Length: 249
Length: 249
Image (cartoon, rainbow over all chains, first blue to last red; front, side, top):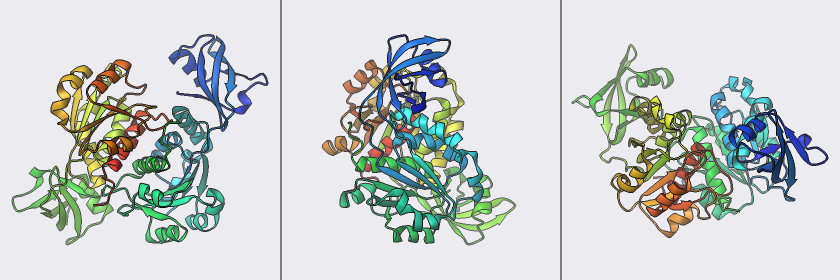
């Protein structure tokens, strides 16, 4: 854990937090903290800061919390992802949060199996802790906003503008497309990117047509076809690099 | 499966191959091939080509194999990776082969647990099929060469030159390093890259010193610290993009 995320309700009015869960266990057993030690903390969707260990006892750690004034910016990439197999999605949650995604829109598509929507991997009780794990890994506090869309057409035609906002550059990953992410963003600089990644087997022709009709530019990754989870990680990396988010701040 | 890989011994002298394993099952049950259909094939470490279904019976498929004359180039990136946890490595094999790696050198490091070396995930019987799975996903035929090194110092001081060849640009991933992969390769263009990725928790100071003394330049990925498997995928993506391998061939 590179940062300990706290929820607002965990902070006392005096600015301290008492931890007794796996975070306390990590502080005591892995980092072996003692009174006076400091650790990197963050407030969920709020600033990062420093926690000073005030006391430890019986598996409980009390931290005095000092936060910076500025809140980290929301990651500049949103992801529109055809719902992957539950096992794959389960592995992706933490990785997506670690790479940095403002919003994750999971959508149906012709090549998505309907029973994928019934999995508990789509419940906040499952993905919430995995997203937090990814944020703590990456030292971020900005929780990706997750929404689930059973109707691809309604999402693309009616809902997308409201969800992703104006001005985002829209890219759709297409095996074999000749334009790279870097070229595309260099030619049309943008502050935000909305990236669409299809299911295993790809979007069908109708879906590609709908996406391009709604402003998505096909981008390729060269001659290698990747599994959708590997493709997600690769493409998010390329988009962040093209936006300059790989510069050390 | 985007390509069916064959081993040289599976080819008859007349240029046909009889498949009766999971590849035949995939051809029959997923692709539902019939006599006369063609599928994309490749010869392990050889050319890609076309397989024409000559007959199907009882779970067996016989293909006539026509291969291109050219063999795909070996991927231009080699990976020096501190041995990850067995569970993580198991998931990485196919992804590394799919992304394209010429050689995978797995090494010990101060923050690698010794018992990681005892896992069956390091046996060719385990990783061979996973690498082939990744090649078939990516439509490549060039099997990464795997070597396992229990002594970091011996590897870096004595063996590395022989393994990775001269002239490869050497990069070591370092959280917080100010230079990006793209900048580094733009400043010193190279035909091959040797990328070193550390363990969870990072290389220790001695290891970083040994690596930099042997020509490795630290490269960063921005302010976010990634898990080592996510970092591998991201960094390989960035190196391939910087080498121009993301252009469609």
